[in-house]
Length: 259
Image (cartoon, rainbow, N blue to C red; front, side, top):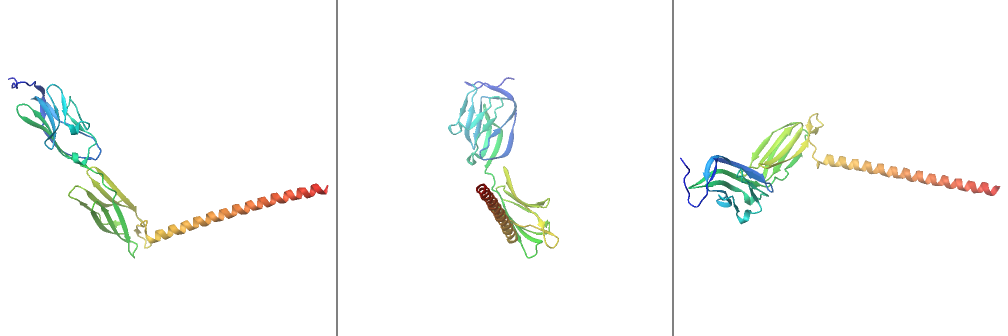
């Protein structure tokens, strides 16, 4: 049995197609290749659409017709019929469809694309109490916030996820407290290490903790005193050397005139 005749159109014979449907997320500025899987099938033209608007059309004569708004931002592979999207922006999110056109339109691939910004770094804050082994933690990022408490190195791990797929996770690993913020295309975290506490347990010294600031000020003072002492020693040695050299000169002139 032959293929149906379509007036004024040259048919392209491909291999049988397999319909695919994917959810894909990429970061702003990335490129993405949309593939299809085809076996034997007949069509007169091949179309890629974005939210029901044409991105490009591949004709039976091998001509590629791109929509004006996509001319410099897409590439079409004439052998695999894949579509490559370049320098993606958030307004490029949406439904992409590959359609074979013959007597009817047949969708052979669908991609639900989300173009996302990378997440900002989260903020991990440590609040010390009068008991150095009892600590309160706050992990914040992307309008999400987690509070937790620790005793020594035992902390309550927590996580939460926004409706947009942004996840915040507070965890403990290898004596580190980790505040992790992620979305489907990126992940960032802040870490703080446990330090020994006076009662024999462990606690965290935040960089803004008063005791740590005092220790830093004392260390800076010691360094300054050390620099001043070294400078004074160098000055004294210089004066001593100059005086000795001057005295030797005076003694030489006295001996010379004595003769």
